[in-house]
Image (cartoon, rainbow over all chains, first blue to last red):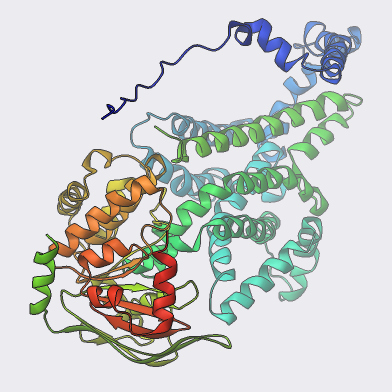
Length: 373
Length: 257
């Protein structure tokens, strides 16, 4: 009788030393092959030849102070941020608030409130996140209406046709995103419905709004819509733009959500059914959370696109951030400083879009329950 | 142990599932043909047959994951019709375990188990959690309660799926090939849990090819082919003395290796 051998696992050893450390990293990632080395060198060459002159112009030699163009004309080698500085209120808050210094507190308060509510939400350990979210999504828009639009509580009513700058961009994008998400979710569910009538309605809605350029929708909302109302009935231009943007955006959001719903295995709904959960509970508790998680990147993608597309409202004579920067740069006092205006507007767009993008990546990572431990 | 289970089979209760002249089509394809089946309370039935024979479809009709076109299914006195209220009443009392587990990946193991008791049975959260922990202990994984399904092995996931069904305190359990997606080393741990359930007198319908399990716990083995029940018998008779040549061929093929 031979004895049974006892299995003893071999101990783990550390990897060879030439695969660790910064030199190994450089060799592997930047100079791994001839083409990779050429790409690396080309990249550094371009950085060194284009970056320093730009930094020089935009920061080192730039003009920051002063109240008129004489400062910038005296030092033409640097960027003229003086222009942005002087016209900041106009570019951020639009003509109505820029022309009334005593009303400037209104948009200022709104943005302070917005960031005060938003920033704590970005940190994982903030207590009472639920209430902050409710305040941001439910209470904040109401405050926005009463403070920025005014007309009650002794706050003078502002003229929406003179809304503009970043305030307008923000209002259009915020309303578009806030309303398009729930409408889009319902449309996506409707498009997957087993009831043919509901499905057809949703398909027609989505395909109609998705197949029409936003610029056309805005133009129609501005020019065509008044024709359907009796003479004398005025429909606010900004509200019309908001409705058009929401309709358009909800179709895109619906398709993003539908993609997520389609990716959920059928077994998930079946398991929920087998436990006795009805349609709405099944949807709200099981399929939708998983579908939304999958579609975060594409939903945020449509939000980012919307944020930038709001500049199309110039077609109906509204001056958003981009158009306001352009308008300011074409004024008699600051003629010729378009580049600074565009760069500033571009930077604000970029900061917000990048913020949204980072937040979505963060959220994806946080919701990923498949990583081990 | 085996004898204990079989002795109990002599004293089975009243009929809990009654299937009468059941017919189902997928479009033109006639998938279930004139199925008649009575299941007594406490009975343990194993259904086997080649793939495409309609065995999964049959048990999926019992909780109406599939609709039938002809015949009737009565579960615990309630007939399955279009009526959503009746369907949900039956689903509450009939637990189901799937081949691919179908755990909810965005919820923890504990949340998977408490979801239906809380939302369907309206159980208080505390009570639902206590029940869930009791069943997780029974399937021998209480220590995994706060992990997500994606962090567990297949065998562990299937045991959670069984616990999740048990938390609804069902009168009947349906198993749809519960071990077919598992690695060989994990099959035993799932079958052990199922044997334990059988010993406690649970009414069970299992679609499975685990013939050892069938011999050990079944009161009746049903062989299906082409959407029909070809043969049914007590396990000893079924395996040792098949009455139909189709059954004989099937058994010779699966018991060959």
